[in-house]
Length: 484
Image (tube, rainbow, N blue to C red):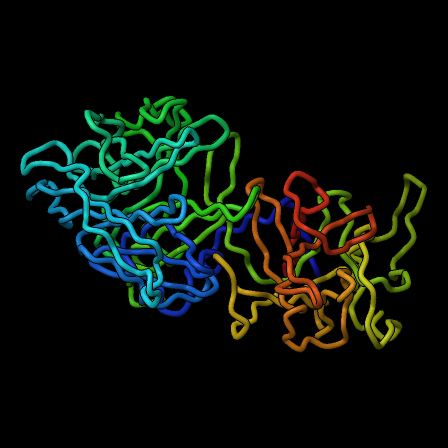
């Protein structure tokens, strides 16, 4: 076997193993946008209740939402939470479209809190039995100017927009619903860089592995549209640029929600109509959001494997600070005429060099990449360590060893002889909105604020506060593949 390097600038692998769902009991249909409350994550689903997570990776039931109905949404406004839902599940093209959109307030989403109490529901929109809109699938959006918008509707008619009062939750007096889309459902609006984006779900739901759900997007300079896709079609004409579709054994993504952790770190929530590895049930999905040419799309779930870890700042590779050991190989001839047979030179192997490495802790630096063993990092999930929003914690070890990357009390990085599972040896990996990655230890001894792996010099990795606006904070992963 010999090593081969994939030279793609940023890891982009669309495989079934890359597109995993969350763990625990992440079973939900039509999830609301994820909201954080008192350190926990919440999402609500069709029917009643929803999911709670302590860390954003392991989910369990327990969220409480009265009213039942279909396809809720949630948003934090000031120090309160506004939760909306529809009164019916919708009966499709062959049934009634009579339904109402309801909203209600709560001071907290924690059902164990003494402040937990929903207000009486408020009707903000409705449709009649034979109307060309079905008032379900609410989407709540607070615009930068402070105006609160509510979208609703399904692919059995139009998507409509009404304005709500962000203080009372009531519909703004005299506001008339307008049609802004069709041939979709589960609509929601987001804003970025002067553009309003309308996202919705195309296709058919509720058929498990036969569902054709997929998420699309259009954009406008106004929250009232018209919304155009990337080829000039309007959303009201059935257009939409793809955001995410079925991947491997995960079928039918729908019901987009956006969660901004901080500048440059965004996640999208949704459900997979069917996880074929979990009895075809509908499960919660979370993926990074990447912005390309002004359009959002789903990033990749990180794939465990062996990589070169490359600094965007310098192009140098993260490596053990060991003495340089020359690799064996024939010298390059200078003559244009060479009648010697062409041979394949074997890459330097771990066993060629590990005996000359120090036995204790080894410092870590950035250096010119030469595909050497001290530059090959295996990144492996640690299931018992939990996770963060959208991913598990990983150990980062030199390939073929248990020598682990670790944070120090001086906010530096080193490679310790053995992985022990200590918090400073656990790492989160977030794909950023530009497609590069952030690498962060679960904790740094003696430090309370989160720190990220950063290159302060071409050869000097350290741990400081993450800053999306500098390439010092960004990394790429170039994967090794073993060939027979």
